Amino acid sequence: MRYSNDLGVTFSAPVMVNAQPEPIYDRSENRPKLAIGTHGELYVSWSQSLARPWTGFVWFARSLDGGAHFSTPITVHVDRTEIGHAFDALAVDGKGRVVVAWIDKRDAEAASARKKPYLGAALYYSWSDDQGRTFAPERKLMDHSCDCCRIALARTPRGDIAAFFRGIFGDNIRDHAYAVLHADAQPNKVERATFDDWQIAACPRHGPGLAIASDGTRHVVWYVAKDTPTIWYGQLDPGHRPRHVQAIAGTGASHADVAVDGHTVWVAWNQVNAQGYTLMIRQSFDDGAHFDKPRSLASTAPSAGAPQLLLWRHRAYVAWNTAEGFRLLTVGEH
Amino acid sequence: MHRVFVALAMLAPMLTHAAPLIGLSAADVPALLKPPSHGERIIELWALDCVYCELNMQAAAAFQRAHPDDVQLITVATDSIAQKDAILERLHATGLDRYAARAYTDATPERINYLLDPGWGGETPRTLVIHANGTTRGISGALTPQRLPAL
Image (tube, rainbow over all chains, first blue to last red; front, side, top):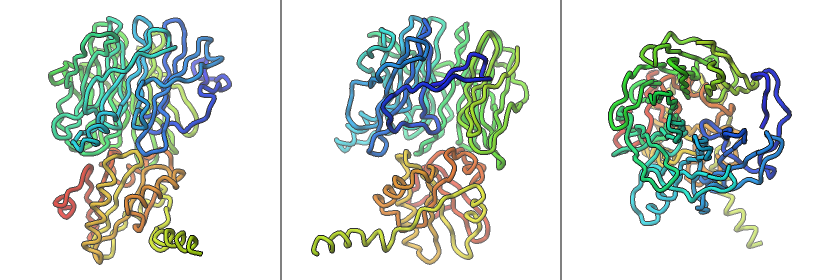
């Protein structure tokens, strides 16, 4: 981990999070995550790749001294069978609890052992009430999640952590689900939240984005390639079709992220063409009712990771990791 | 001596049939997409972490075996060729290692994805069928015995 105190101009020397090197998933949407606690704690999660194909463990480490040292990593889940636990997502709720969600293959493996069909994987999560020292036994949120798409987490105005993720509905329909992840015994209510009916027995490799406004509006972006590849924006109304649905970008667009502050909504994504990658942005100044024209922020030829929108003092930035180096780009004031 | 013979016998299928894994860069894409002189070329795009891909590749291989004179099959791993050992091991385990095999030379595959098929968002498996007349069809997801001939 490295940090910058001058908005990405310079960075500290790297500090090793996991002192014991290991193979980790670092590709596409399955990469390490970083979150900051309510008292400045630094939390990191990642998915370790195990020897067998499609298997992994979700690991976690914390720093309570501003990143000078990290704790000995712990496995987040109780289940230790050598199966798939990956695509970890990390967030801190309003009470300071650390929430980790991931894609888990235990139910698919169990069904396979009984020679029963099971589509996709399942979504599990756990939480820590003690600043990441220990994690509660995991809870299953939903059977039949997609195998290979990132999970979007965001904090609700009440301080809970909500998840928006690609599920499998019916016969391989890869629409999305929404749920608040209760960190207690409350039952979880998972609802289908997109209704594109993209039916495909494949790994879409494009997870959604979620940002929740202070009034509770759930701004989301998601990817569908039912006809032509399209990134959509909408406002969730779980159980029903999203509202204010708009096509944000088309062919060549991938890995969108969304952020909201006040009445301003930003969507950033990678636009690929024959020359390489362009980091694109669109803004709405009326709560997502309309978006301005796409604007390019930066370009790179070799390779680029998924962009991440970050907010600081009502300004939006995009963190963009490319083969040419890490860049923090200022979107502009609103 | 007997042990040596057994070891050689185990190696023999790989020595006689396994195709080498060749990198696929952006510059290599036009040659890969060049229409065949006759019949069709099937390009099976797959990935190490794709749980749906092996069955697809096997379906494409079965189709190629049924039409050996008219159909070429090339597997393309969207993983970096830096994972060569894992890719070759998987191709061998699934009986696909006798077919021409490529793997991306770039760790982030989207640009090559786009060059191969601008209408493809990177979901795997993806099957490209290139006909001798220059037409190309692409389809994502599971192949069925009916679906592949229709392409």
